[in-house]
Every structure is written in structure tokens, then in C-alpha cells.
Amino acid sequence: MRFIIWVVVNALAVGAAVALLDGIELTGDTTTDKTLTLIGVALIFGLVNAIVGPIVKLLSLPFIILTLGLLLFVINALLLLLTEWISRAFGLDFSVDGFWTAVLGSIIITIATWVLEFVLPDGD
Image (cartoon, rainbow, N blue to C red; front, top):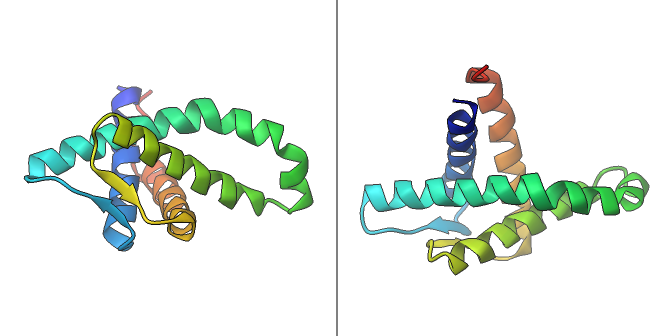
């Protein structure tokens, strides 16, 4: 049950970024196609954040401390761009137009995830 809630939270957070930013696009012919694409992107984004994210953050910890945490915005944006690249490799129509759009998108996704995790039950 926790896994399903985790996917839903990621999908809603990515959907919020798609809705709020013109530079992040999710295309599909029908609503079902867009929903399935959003779920696929959410799965990929969650796996990238769960596997690659901690490794990159651990290796860059001295620089994160040196920049007072501002490097985390760059890391999260790069993880979002990595998600776009992997999504395209799997044939999902998800695109992010550039680095600064990825920074804004990662901020929106982070805020939306915090809010949704607070509102939705944790599944335990």
C-alpha cells in the first residue's frame, strides 16, 4: 500500500510541475495516455531520487555545506533532467526545456511532495 501512495504522490507532484510550468511538458493523445505517462515518469523519478540522489548528495556533501545547501537545487534539477532522459529512453513523452526550468520544476515537485505527504496517509 505504501508503494502505491508513493507513486501517487510522485505522480501528483510531477503533474503539478507540468501544470504550473510551460517548459515541462507531458504529451499524449488521450487522458489515459497522459495519465499512464505521468505514472511512468513518477516511477522513474522516484527511482532516480531513491538510487542516484543519495549517492550524488553524499559525494557532494562538502560542496553542499560550502554553498549552504544551494547546491541541492542544482542536484535536484539534474536529477529531473536525468528523469527526462530515462523517460525518453522508455518512450515516454516527457520533456523539460533547459536547466532553469528543471530548477523551478524540482522546487515545485519538492513543495508538492511535502504537502501531499502531509495530507495523504502514510500507508502503515
